[in-house]
Image (cartoon, rainbow, N blue to C red; front, top):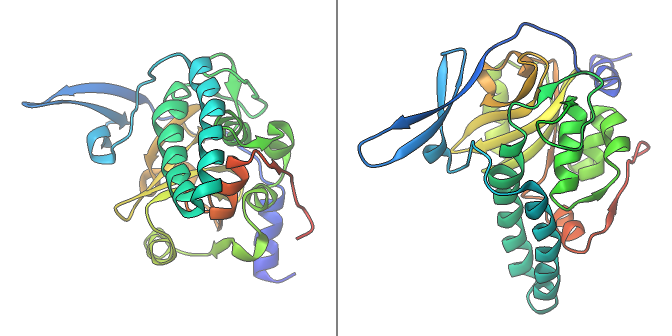
Length: 263
């Protein structure tokens, strides 16, 4: 078996494993002109909500948010009939904002467990695969969250994008990985499958942030990928989400996304 084949085998049997804990703290920092919500991990670094232009604290009622998304999909469907390009571009920005600002903030601090599959943020536990599949489903993607979460990382990626369009990186230092990722991708949200873990990668101003249900922290966190113990891997499989025009169209028309294990 070749090295790349062996690495792909590992991701085909991916799982979330226990590791050392880090403490996650969400704090409010009072500046002269504004209040910044900052995410702090182990006192090593701060993520600035204003710099990233995303929320760290939940706002509104979660059920109301997810129901509104279903209604908004009809708007984009109608827009698509008159202006396809505008509909895709607008829906891409909408999905980016809704995921990072409305859906995910309710999930921060939800406890991680290898067998967790809660459908309600901060009520029960959530495994890494279920965190991705559940938040995508609540974002309006037509998928079976159980089947996606139980699939291998590579197959989860192929549910979102065809195998030929995925980007697979292996045996790279973080610096080389970051350079390669920034060479092929722009700002946006991406799915990533690792040796034994899955999550989202947010690219913002060429910096990589890892958003996941962390077996290192035992909870849902966002952190600099460079600082994340859980981001260490021999292989990284990337699938586009917010820049994926075909996937965005699937979302607009509520088309079913199924696990594709043979292509």
